[in-house]
Image 1: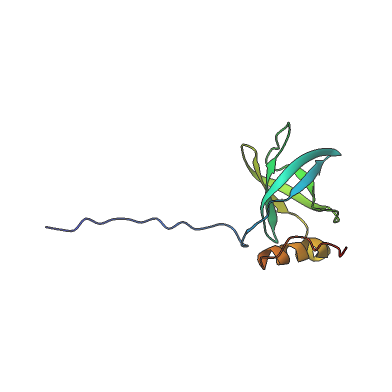
Image 2 (image 1 turned 60 degrees about the vertical axis):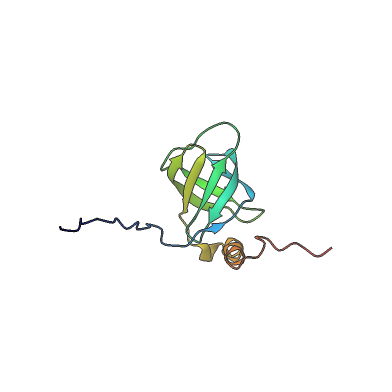
Amino acid sequence: MQAKKTTQTLFVSRRANTRYWYQEPLHVTIDGNIARCVGINISVSGICVELRGLGLLKERTMLEVHLHNFKPVPGIVRWVKGREVGIQFTEDLANHPQVRALVARVENGEPPVVEAPR
């Protein structure tokens, strides 16, 4: 009796950077229009958000991501699954040190933004 051969498929992630949980309110702007969102996860290369309110985004839409009161980060919609949207940053975060620091804090398990002392 011969043993059956089984084939296992390995899942290969196409992600270049690790994603970190990031559930914070934010918004994106598209040609001056604002779409409110809540973050799902973030990395140095992009962010996954859930759209709130009316409207949908389409793949390849150019936009700006507004995190807290930081300088907006340009991005492009890479995928859409219902209300979830994957956005790739199109500018290096070296040009956005506050956002890069936010990602580093989240990566280290710290709050995304350091609160000012009272």
